[in-house]
Length: 311
Image (cartoon, rainbow, N blue to C red; front, side, top):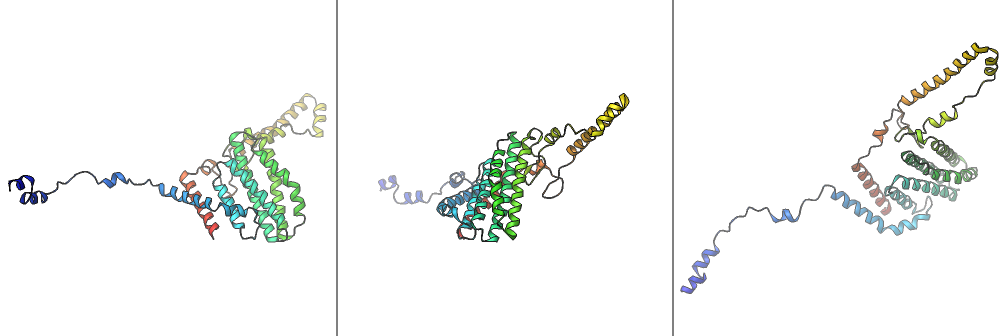
């Protein structure tokens, strides 16, 4: 009996088992083991899942590379192109993609020449993509004060200027209108490249722009018009009029120069007009895009691509 009491058997054991367990003040272990996820973690996970889905169906995308307008895989082909633009590393790479896609649209228009509606749509898309590519290349050239990005514009326009002229001559109706519009865009892009090369030193980043990108500064035009032509009567009048007539001629010659300088100053100080809205543009405000908005745009673009590929 003494052993039972010493070893905690019987009543003593029952007393120990019924003793209250002391409460602990430590936080639950789950709080330390499972911390809350960052707010952006869900978005990153969704983007990763979309990218995984894109990679998984890359075989279908590759098979659609030769698809033409009206064929089953053509929508997959265009979705793949949008994905490439969304995932482009920088503006230079995106601009090169735009020119490549414009070249593809021209080839598609030539391949489906019997379908007027498809030809017109392809040529209109080519004009839009050429504008976008030219604008981005101009922005890169102005930002870096380097004309080399404009070489891509020159290569494209030189390659397709005569090809388009011969191809469009065989179109009618809506296809002819779209082809002539594309030819005009090609010519305008070529001219913009030449003008911008000569005005990089006086074209500011974020300045006035239009559908083809930065508008060249006035320095190139001023250098060309720096010596206005002399009218036939001015030289003879100055020689026959003596010193007084010569002085009067000099004063008269100075007046247009002053007026031109005032006009240049007025153009410089005047607010630039936004081609899309018609109002005064604010280049600094237009160029600001938050990282959150960019992520949201990328997420929406990839979601649309996946939806097109599975539908």
